Image (tube, rainbow over all chains, first blue to last red; front, side, top):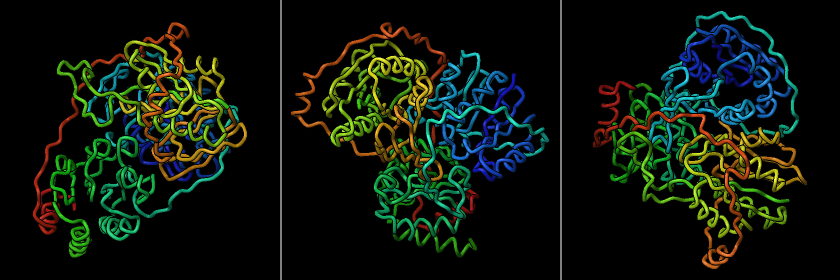
Length: 316
Length: 249
């Protein structure tokens, strides 16, 4: 059996989510080839990084303008063109592949298995349903498997390989959609899905300014990524790419600090696998305290600056 | 332009679901069911297009048990013009749903299909993309803004790094994210009016689609629990615990 892992990268560097999905792909048991599709110079560098990953036996590169902006139609067409050589298609469950993989699955007449958290056997996987309130074990009866991987539950594969890099056979761009523009936040903070520490704010933050005044200094003191609850994003206090939860990003950092977050089911679904959870909330009955290792019942507007200062004294 | 909006009947988002003790699934008896929240956003967006004069008709379709007609009525009460119920028993997987929807699209010829990005029961996030693939149409998932440009569309999407705007050649598939709009509540007069709106009764057999599941569910289990920890009295104690007990600082 041979598995094609589709790499997540930002057209410059390979993303950590690729390393994590590789761990899942390797557990399927066969050879793992990696497809790096992108536009421009950076694609080659990402391919070279992929070739060094332990367990990868071949890297396929597809470089072209059609792959520059992660449009679903040309990338799906490319993967389908490569399909005859593969038994399984694995990708991290990032927004790019949540978009592309079901399109691939339908074109191959395969029922995709979304966001697996465990490989039980080459054809059997665990995946969360109902916002993680139940875990289903499913066995795929399709000849080919199409799988997305919830990266927060798999360790990142390391280096140690030296795979050959080849050009992938090209596929025609269906030309159904075109890129217009993007608003990508530039930040020096770690990305949510790979951050070791995350500080998140909720509705109680009351404004975007308060995020900047209270949450961000604490995050920067900890070298943390910044997250937000759905309520905070809906209210416009935080941008959409900060949202942690069932339908936002699913994270599992070493330390998750929830500030002014009540703990709705859909938020817990996105962070309850964190190693240590701290909750700061003035409502002592807030559901977030039921999952928090350390709960502080306090007014965040006092407690957070105090915490930031205390960490400063620790030399953070 | 006609707009087709597929909707799913799911366990209400406020219900805390319980896994059956024999591991065969989750408890669905006597549980409140509602329209999938992302599908409500889809219905709302279609209605706004109609109110802005960009759409001529909004058709709501649901695939599921007889009670899914209630979900369709919800859409009609919000303002949709008519419904189609495709009766199906048991769980119908996204791939099979997409195949049935393809047949519905071929019969109805909409210029746009708007769907929720995922259903909050199986959290699959697949149906829209699969439908686009089967039809050979363009797709824009996770939409936070939708503009009609003739028979084409300009869509802003919520992606991991921020926002992306793309242009779709119509007819197209769009799936909704949370920030696209805030769905309206149906008014009482509209709920009454909805009772008179037509719902076409169909069955899976009418479309000749094989809905045999491809995934065999071996087991459904409770997730590993997480116990509440301790309450600390102040910031100093918190920092101390994080440093010495948790070792994360």
